[in-house]
Length: 209
Image (cartoon, rainbow, N blue to C red; front, side, top):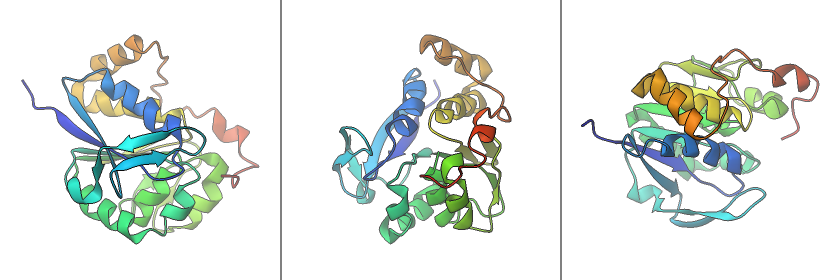
């Protein structure tokens, strides 16, 4: 049996709950393949943007290696993009990881850590101008459900993280595994990374989050 991949889910104050739990629910459909761990600067409860706290099982000092690193977005990213402790951990841990993945404005943290330089990436359209303005070395694309470049996956806003997670699963385990996970979750998978129905909706309102 193939060893399970360790998936580290980053927490910080003000993270968006669906950015985190949407993808994690998909990966949790395959406990034989993925071991999920939550991590934050310090272990303990971390408040979400508009909901209950989630417990970080490990602090940065306790978790130096993961196979997959998942970075959610949310309003808290505006403060964390200046958090050098978090960015240093992202740089080091991300460099060793097999795959990096962000949802929504989580892309700004991967960008600030240097992981998106020279790559195409996307983010939440409501905050697109802000995120894109933080790192000119990234090829920011406003119309994409998610983008996969080498070892990095970046998803658009909120629910797009679930589509991205299934695409990531398809790469690692095969398309049938991803399709089955979506079926078990009773989720209709948008498996076309270029099908972004919300890009036009938010075209004139790209700096609200």
